Length: 357
Ligand SMILES: *Cc1c(COP(=O)(O)O)cnc(C)c1O
Image 1 (tube, rainbow, N blue to C red):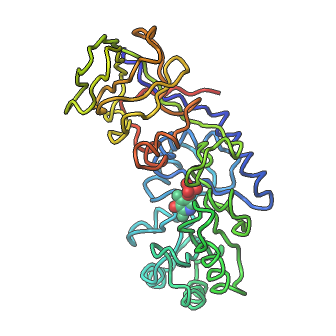
Image 2: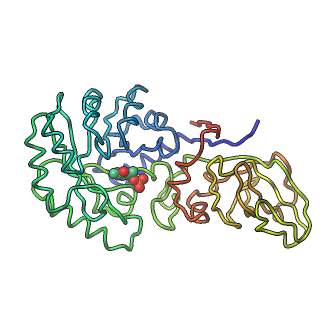
Image 3: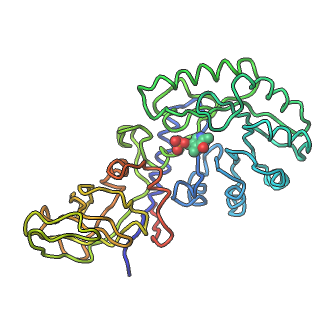
């Protein structure tokens, strides 16, 4: 059997939720579990975080999957509905929706929802992705509030640069948001993980952490341990070959890496077909028998190769950690010019999943 697997530490997931609650004790938590719970299994995450105040997903299909799995936690559709025909199903499953565009409001005006629909009005405070313009927030709020069958929970926005603690645009976003909805009734929600952990002034009635729940730092150059977070996902495999090569031997596709001396090179049974990033450069750390060895050569679909000069005694069957416990996924992302989010979401279906605690 190919021993390429992720272990999911559900105790760490619960620990991280407690940690985030402690960092913002006055706020409720809407856990972002879209994209299959950032690759951890959406239903599994929802069940493990049964104590959370609400769940945030990207689309109706995800929400219905959760309801069909018996999850009764309040669910918010973070992008609302995409088409009017979703509304009956949304009401049937008692889902909350984010309203981010005048077009959605026009649809609700034409078809007042029944049973009542709870909505958040999303304001664009500077990210320029989703949200009504800040100077229209009040007028759009009034339109929404006037529709029978619409209950406005409150107002939300999303931060574009909270992952960089030196970026002044976060404060500008907060100021614009508060000014745009000053005096409007209802609750507020602003903070993602980076807001929650790095910008206490962004805390509101609700915070919306995602990546931090999975035990990953949301900050540029950050590490989860700095925030007392524990990695939930560990990607593991094993050595399936140890090759004694000569000086000058080229490794793998393209032969981009050559042995600078006679040396052992190990082959690990994991590759981009499992979600390990092909763009990981030579020197990316791999944990072999609990100690680091550098990746060499190109990552292939099912395998990658490592420099065994630091562990010449390594043998076939030795255990390898690609990221997770003992090797922060943040570090792997940096070596692959991507972000941990993409690595976690990208683990493919053939990787075996093992739950722990
Ligand atoms: C995904 C998402 C979040 C969570 O972001 P993290 O950076 O993972 O904490 C929060 N709010 C919205 C609207 C989202 O789509």
